[in-house]
Image (tube, rainbow, N blue to C red; front, side):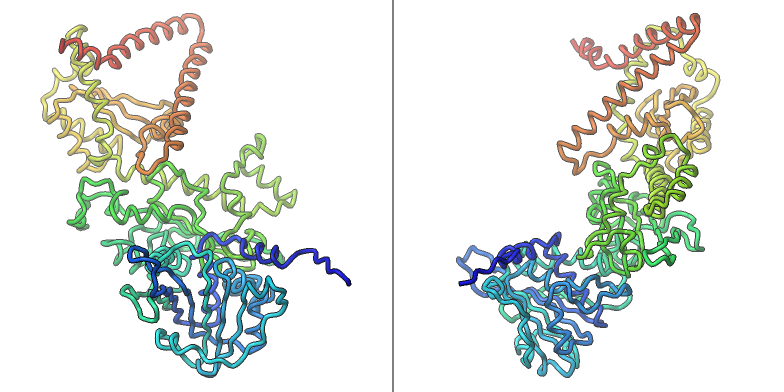
Length: 622
């Protein structure tokens, strides 16, 4: 008897196919929708069907079938049979959204043990049918069963809306690996991804209908998927009200193609030809983050004191963090590697990279169309480390001379990292720095500083601001403050007026603010105003980014690990700050160094007074 020694057993083959790398059931379903769209469908229906039986009264109904039906061109017998072969698809050209022809079998087997396909070109009653069953594959089945004439089951015909002269129905059963139990849970978790992946096509008129069912009866909740745009420029969209009918963001940046917020880069493909890559960017409108914008009514159901990130539209934006990679009008991935995960402000910007299939090798597009690995790997690329002292222009020329194939992507990354994200983040910081909610984080510090100033007024001679106060009226002081806040620190007149009134109402003679001052080497500046000592933290100084922003940022949604890392990072920045002062003294000549030493000691004594304000209050209470 002759034994067979297969290199790979059928069981191992099946296991490998099941572990084909789909991120979720929703991503696998997207492969089926791709096929319908590539076949020219303008309606794709996604059915999630629950069983009518339950193990007990308290048990939930379990999904027993998932199906995708399209009204595309359908398939002939040869094409249908080929469609269930791994790596033998019919759409391997680099024009549409398909890639490598592995989508239908790979995505199906990743979720179920049996997939049935009906396809027709002359009415659903004349459909051809074939299937893959993993039990048969494990038993040695080596060929896709030959398609046979078998009309689309009556139950599906009754449930469907889009049955036409031609089309395809893919049905999954024996759902061993589907993530969610019920029909609505499956659709709810799929809808956001489907709306995002196909947002452009949906906006252009392609319908993707979502149908929950039990047995063969539709359940409440039948609807069409709406665009889910991480750039928040589309309307209407799936964004919560009031931004479901108007854009929540606006285009950001001048652009280089005559369109605001759009930059074009020309990139050579593997075929030697040049192709355009478009980088689009957007930023939240003021009304998404502030309840006090004239003409933009804040929803009555949402408290104006609520952190905008906790509003329904803010929570929606938190789920769309990252850079969206678009290929052939279809999203591949929403890459979070570019975001500061601990910073809630990151949700308020959007960036999209749009490239054609001809650049698949350059970007590193995966077979299952879920990532562009070469581009994503550059998310943490630090050109300065690799440049070893060269300027950007010198480094770029070096890469060009060396023929580095990454150069076009590195140039795009440079644009995003060095020009785009920094400006987006600084503009977002400016957008709310004058709001009541933003100012509130300084209140405790101002209150403690005010107590310390009161004590020192008793113990020391009048300060410079005390002396200035004797020379002007209260109204003149308010005018000086208004001019300072608006002209010097670029607050809006309304924000500036409110800040002044708050200080007066609270009886404060100290104020802490943030300000933009890229030309100043100081990490904080002091304004001496009659009866007011004002400190402004320079947001353009590294100390602000590495210390203040890390500690002062919102903590909503941050994990313990992220918070611990923020503390470690801030502690390191503070220690470096002290070392920088030490080096400052070290570089001074003898006499100035002695003066600096005395200043440091005097400042230390006053710092003890300010930081010990709570202890002094406790002693007074006793």
